[in-house]
Length: 393
Image 1: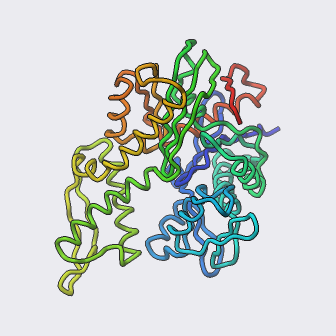
Image 2: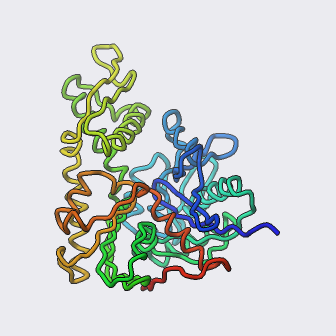
Image 3: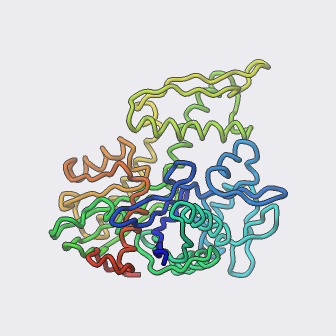
């Protein structure tokens, strides 16, 4: 009899990741060798939709057919200001029908959960290829303070993707578990900073051995790695505009490629202090196209990020205020999510709580999926000693 595979899934704003337990080991789903699947859907004029990395690359040639960051409107009511903000940032109309948000795509109307389901389906299919089994069940993660509408919409998306959700786990709890924090039988105050591609969530959590209890949460739903990419791009576009008068925003394909290259630069500058950035035919000056060849260093990009880092610090301060904690009362600061790998962010957190208290995994971008996968063990006969948590939702 084939073994049952249960997925642990972290459905993210910019990327989704998932894994399964193979023995006592977490094995992550792969998309062309990468352990994160872009939460991107491409809707062509004709033919089948594309999801993931291939869909993301379509932004360079056909950006109007690409749907990104649908998590930002999942489960929201039409009168939410976040819906209006999302509508102003995408290349297709966003309308409302009764109490529903509708995306007006080339092939017709679609609800946000249908786009979310397309991403989850892609992850399930990749998992079935990797693990050689039909997969029907999953443990999924929820943002730090989800609305009932979001929870219900995510459940609908999972059902459309032919998955039964066994449990919904708070993302900060899952991420903390991935760091192995439950291995120490202690009582302490933990600050979990979940900095993803689209949102920044902070939770104050009391750990008592293998039991975790959230005390307070606060989030900025429009602060994430995507914003850091765009801030670098804005800085470079400003330099070009001042020198040549060319506005890179006028060409959506050029602008999209610039943001792509800035995302790659951001990742490299997490481990290096200076890197080259090159882009062919980047701008037009005096009737001729010119390549961009610049050298980026950490001080320059961190200057571009000043406002974003200040906003992230404000989210941490508000979470501490709601918990009634001071920064020096924090015993551990667990940093999860790909954006938490930015050195300037780590330094800011360390300056608040003490650098020796900061915990960061070299797999920060998939920490939440790893934690969710660990918690699938509670539904397996082979595993018994798994962490527990309480939650207000």
